[in-house]
Image 1 (cartoon, rainbow, N blue to C red):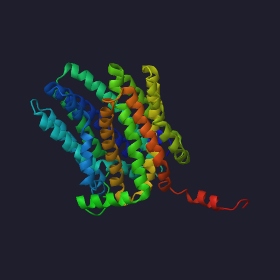
Image 2: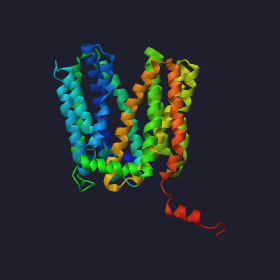
Image 3: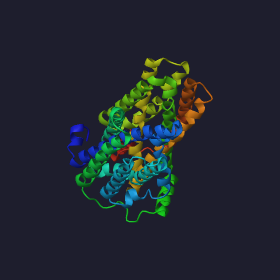
Image 4: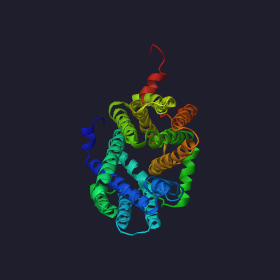
Length: 403
């Protein structure tokens, strides 16, 4: 599977894609409404940031408790359950006068349920698509997330000019209802990957099994740490550029979109394997130039080029699927997603702390340098994670010269 027409010809993928788009649009517009409401009530920038971006921290709890639900539940039921909880949570947010503490509890509950079922979405891509279709499908889903975030934040911002936050929540609730319908009626029922029931004991047992595997451990560390530090660089766009920071965010989003399209659509599996190291190095290197305190246009170019490197996660996830036990692929991908989101939140907070001590442009360069060092230190570990070459290739490599 190499083209978008082939990908969208798969009925179930179309429905999963549309459900994901509706869910992301609902999340971003309601997050903006909640942030606006939180700031109006509390006047706290910290609480406002947590209301908009702190929910992924619930993934830590999900990864330590019921993450095995991604494999123990049939995937359609798991994804529908998460969509229904998100629908109910957004509907609760529409209540005017709801205390801020209750609003925070709701978003954490929704994020927790999403963290324990999210892996089912990514493992389902392998079930509904022909072999080799995962990278193209995942890159397409990634691109849709970026586009829908831009659309959600943009539309949400415009709506808040004319509507109250609870009215924006009503619109988001409608989008959540679309996501529920597309998930339940657009996917066919499949059995659970694992026979065992979801439990904290099974979650921790599989986590230990995944972490004990040298290849999986190397992949997790390479997927979490270097990119998390670069997200710390992005977290400083606002103090770096002030009211023009949106241009930097847009440039970064465009670079990420370009990387996903090129790697997912145009590179063969062999080319993706060769591109892993260059893409991983591309991610931090441009940000080192922030040490020179570039003006906005060159800073935008640097952010755009660097963000192409995020596409290194696509072949690394492909390797993770190959290494993870079939009955635990949902949990393996869910752990990767939760760890990535948690790392991004932690490194964003670290970036803020560093920028309180150093000038912002030096803080960006320092985080990029740390990311580069971590990338180089972890590169050798990937030799344990690379998939074996196909049998035909292996046989050709084993043949004596001149045979």
